[in-house]
Amino acid sequence: DAGVIQSPRHEVTEMGQEVTLRCKPISGHNSLFWYRQTMMRGLELLIYFNNNVPIDDSGMPEDRFSAKMPNASFSTLKIQPSEPRDSAVYFCASREVLTGNTIYFGEGSWLTVV
Amino acid sequence: KNEVEQSPQNLTAQEGEFITINCSYSVGISALHWLQQHPGGGIVSLFMLSSGKKKHGRLIATINIQEKHSSLHITASHPRDSAVYICAVYSNTGNQFYFGTGTSLTVIP
Image 1 (cartoon, rainbow over the protein chains, first blue to last red):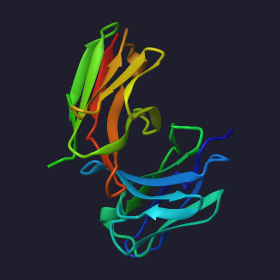
Image 2: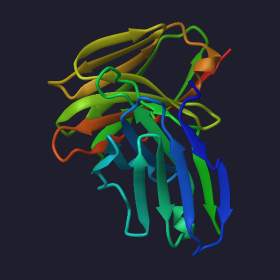
Image 3: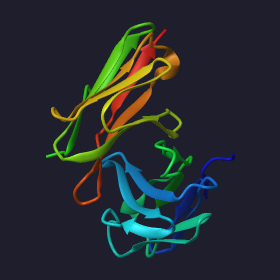
């Protein structure tokens, strides 16, 4: 299996622009997580889905952030408009709830907003 | 106040040493995760625990639910174990994840 696939790996964008991060979970996994990592705040869970349904979005920092999972094989995290403080590494992870305890992480999307 | 506290924050060890990283938490949990983040940034989930002890190779994770404490042990440490180890708990109220700030481990040959 190719693992959790995230794109883009790196993005530099100007303040005010829309940013869309993409994630393809491992096939067969039914839980998907979006995390953000910064030096100041460490690793934070933003939102997670079970069976494509958002379960907990309490970690989403504000209305500029939105996440969707239109089907079992694809999710997006969108920031509109982006701000410099959104600069971070965004990780996507997936898990098969019924038989697996392990969460598999993507390699992360490194976002810089200037 | 952090819901999850890790110690030590930084740790340097000689190759072969036995290493312990501690995690204490203040919320009721349904599960505790130990994560490993490599210098390149990639994150790997090492263990998920809800009770007792798990072992995988040279890694051992234990949890004491009553004391709200978990430890990650590395036996016969190796330079390739150098990474940041993060403790994360999933609370059983409020459905939230809480993360420790991580322990940066460097194993010297």
